[in-house]
Image 1 (cartoon, one colour):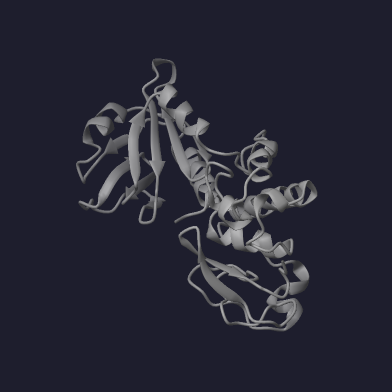
Image 2: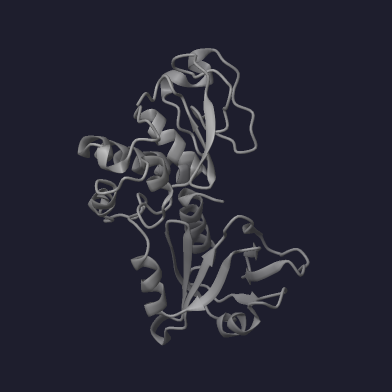
Length: 272
């Protein structure tokens, strides 16, 4: 499932290509046809993200509403220059103008919603490190009162929005925090450092459109090691590195199931 930086990057991409310009909206698959007909001929007013949720705003003063998109595990967006390729029945929503096209396939959610329904989505999500003004204290209040492991809490979108399996594993490693530490045992200083790190790392993720979490002194060039080869891309410390040596201590990276996902950590560097 894409992490929050990917969705914020998509919001930027949609806005940069379609904002303020009339577009064609179609649903070759048919599941979004009625809503696409309402959007057809309208300009995109704005695009924004909250965690893993993307919102495309249409209608201006008339208030047509928002296209709410959640990619889920299988959703994908293909962006390209016009002319668009021939349509296929897998495209839930195609947006096209004279210069660009965007094809949405396989999302968990693609719905035209009202301002009130959009607010309800925001209200059930935790603060997002990529949304200016979001308050990390909202997350801290839930974390500091919970017996749940910090690794599970970071994956709970009601606690922190946008953090997925990669950022979860990497930020805990970077701060030497045992992933099984109960939330109530995390110190305020640890949480403030983790939040600040997530803000910086995820902003870089938006900028570079990939996740890199290793510090300059641990890059392949600095350490004289081969670069990571993985379809995920990016240089990381522990994610998908099970049974491989830790870049810091040389110990073996471990993996285990936690919060319905595979957790990766270094037992030596992240001691209880």
